Image (cartoon, rainbow, N blue to C red; front, side, top):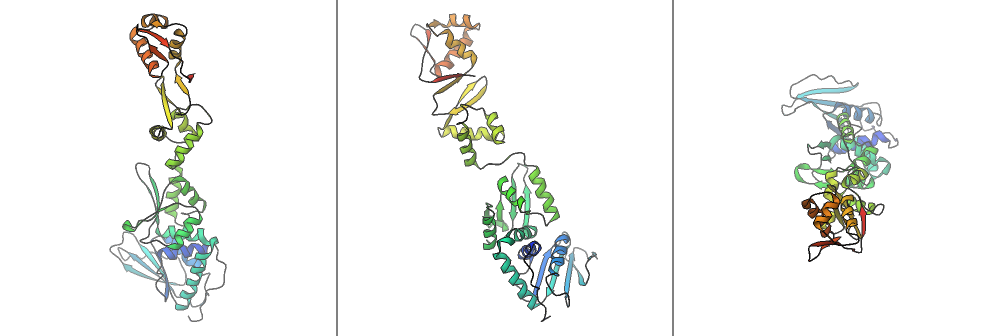
Length: 352
């Protein structure tokens, strides 16, 4: 075993992925053996077949330990490995430990690991491997989506890799929460590097999550700024029109519009049972064609409400309601003799 050495090969994609797997699920504190633990056989098989290409073919004493609730003889389709079976009543499904005892190989392997951690070309592979070992995907019933990399403490190299790919995250120390990643723009970046490609179940779940995204998710400030900029292209919008432009639900758009209104940035006009939104600094008044008809009737002279109702062809109550609405907009005013006259504020009247 003293003569065993890891061959000098380039740090290719598979090696980087094995480094990530080992960092997530290996015993990196031990100095005399290389181990890798997982309950996904595909990962054990991948780690084994990649690793044996790095070492001399002779004198490999690789062992695989199979743990299951029952001492089940699970067939291990690998040659030249020793398989031992054990019972672990706490296990809900079988899991495997890949083990190669060698002080010399462990030293060589750690050199590869450290070199990979410093190589930007290895970042994507390391992250894929680490996620396959310690990652999960969660979709809640209320539509929230979270990708998590479990860790009890922050790891400098994971932070460096996430920053390299411009992945935003939060870190939680609660119950090994680890790195918490949300929002579609981050998931799209992770999809480009194939974050879940190593683990078949996680890959399927990640792909399904992306397919189920019906909307493009924007951060709150981004959506606010985007809506404000949009008003430069058009005088007014409805919530429905903005929802189509930003690929967001009307509810989410209405929520943002209400916030902008509270901040005094925009205001709304109610026309034909719809809210039309404009920038507050614009001298516009939006009215319906019916209200504009009232203004035309009052174009030249003041008139009594009864006469206005007859010209419009509606009852006095309906006429009074419309006139009061126009009065709130500053477009008409009631005289002391109870007649109504048209006002001419320094604002542009837009008829919808």
